[in-house]
Length: 332
Image (cartoon, rainbow, N blue to C red; front, top):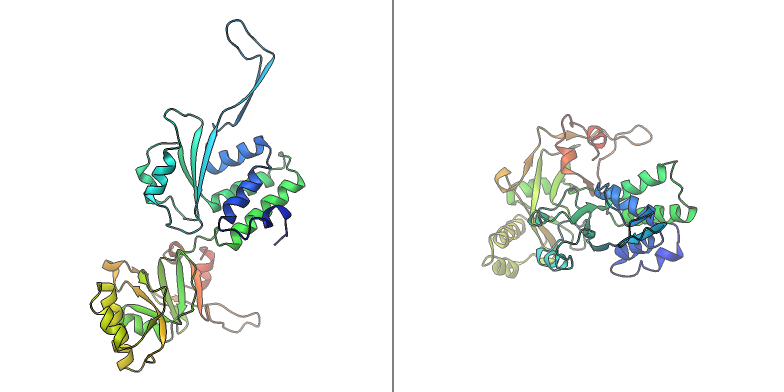
């Protein structure tokens, strides 16, 4: 990634994405900033500055020209899906004054679709868009040969896009498909997925699929709960969880049975996902397995995933997806 003195200043901070966005925005020409926001919000009436020749003034005043600006934009940015808080948004909304025509509250998140939590806001001044839409708007401006964009601005725009990409903000994947030589049977028995305690997954995933024996199995499970902290597989953990929630009890059963069958090692820590076992609990059933057609450069068949791989639920259920090649063509 290019090493910009401007953006690198913000990358160590917690709000580096927002800070980097603002650093770029403040260096844009007003007309370019106006066009960018207008494109990403699909609001052709958005106007930051007005240039008027011979505007009517007070009484008989008719000056030669007037440049005026009157707007107030507020931004709330989230870098993980489904992270918006109704309480926080209502507090932000209080910053908009009654009748403030040129006021906006922009909500920027990586969610692939408008979050349902925003349906409670009926004010058109509350506007949501995702990082992908913002990146598309940047592409539209940079690809327009009729629009002059300085080399510095082009560089900052591209680096901002690379920052979005590096942080996974442009990726609408919501499903992880895990290599499941043993996990597929374990899931079918207990409705859980067990893995190493330090195994990391992208934030925001909502579903899990299983790849084994050269195919993605047709059941795509919804992630109902997961242990971020490692759970020790032993009798004490089973006893503790057995008195908890229904999710806890399911994990307790999985631990007890896997230890008795010798599948897991007693005393070892594991990370556990609780998954839907049927469509009533949230599973999605594909029309059939998705057969792997991936090949190495040599032409030899190659596993679609050796550990875990991300895709989107919309791609998995797209019409005509029967092979991993079809899945890739569908965007997954």
